[in-house]
Amino acid sequence: MLEDIKTIDDFDFKDQIVLIRVDFNVPVDKYHQITDDTRIQSSLPTIQNIISRKGRIVLISHFGRPKGIPSQIYSLKFLTSFLSKKLKFPVKFYEDCIGEKVEKKVSELKNGEILLLENLRFHKEEEEENENFAFQLSKLGNIYVNDAFGVSHRLHTSITVLPKFFGEKKCIGLLMQKEFQFLKKFFSGKGEKPITVLLGGSKISSKIEIIENLIDFADHILIGGAMSYPFIKMKGGEIGNSFLEKDKKIEKILKNILDKCKEKNKENILSFPKDVVISDSFENTSNTKISPIDSIPNGWMGLDIGPSSIKNFCNIIEKSKTILWNGPVGVFELANFSLGTKSIAKKIAKVTEKGAFSLVGGGDSISSLKMEKCDKKISYLSTGGGALLESLKNKILPGIKAIINT
Image (cartoon, rainbow, N blue to C red; front, side, top):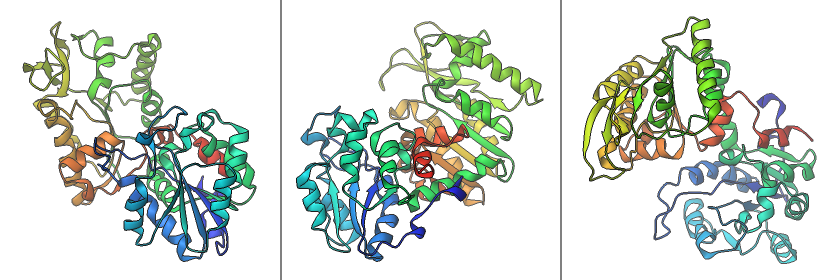
């Protein structure tokens, strides 16, 4: 895939205005303080590289879901001081991303200067693959760089339509390169064995194709969180009031997955929780007890994996040489239901320190690592949750197709 795509090494940026699509959609608290700057930190090498080569940079990004309506809450202006501090030189800002006034500001940029533009999603056209909006954006640069892995699976104007206006003058940034280099092991299935994939979170529909694709080369696929309940129910288990994604097709597809495992003599590849921490309400102060996952009483719901499941999952991870993790195995933001996810985080960090390769993606998984101060011990933290999952389906992301196709 990467053989067909240009990178920033293929261009001379001196005197050029470089339009970089970054993903600065970072989580913030109620005081608008950034709680996880992973995505921004990961984009800095591309910005620094182009600045050092005398380029002029225009940064475009989205932030939150303003649904086409400008709002102070979703303005990117607050990032200017943060970026200036990280880059050690001033970053300018303008309160729109298209129009004559923006074009004038861009034309005034000197070599080595950076202009951050306002939230792309203040224009509803950003989420509509709109040709005219793309054309307006294209006036702001001579070279287009996509360094926004986290949204490269989205059919959004700045990702899939905008690159078409740059002909041969488009490429991916260093962050994108890094993401694909680390994902390569999983595309090829040539990672050092045993290879273990842990999938958690609430929705199985977004991960069914991934499970099917991974059966061929993973040694273990651990399924936790609410993703496990459709399998348990299909096998005749009682799951009480546990979250169950409503989709009539799911049961048939899950059966196909189990049949495929049997067909390939890999019936033991899938591991599910044996026990879960159950509660009678979705609150931290609620009653809790341990229950076998296939006999949860009515009125109770599974909100974390139990002690036997933690032990089983951690034993498998302990013996693994290549690990990929996406999605928590419980409602980890509530202390009573966080032990499973925290235990997984610590175990992956521990085996990585012993020489295993680990790749973790998805905001919740990374948050749990940071809570346990384990994030620096992981081989690679992916900046994309959905994009990582789409990549694992062995498909070329829309944002990459747009760079390859001139």
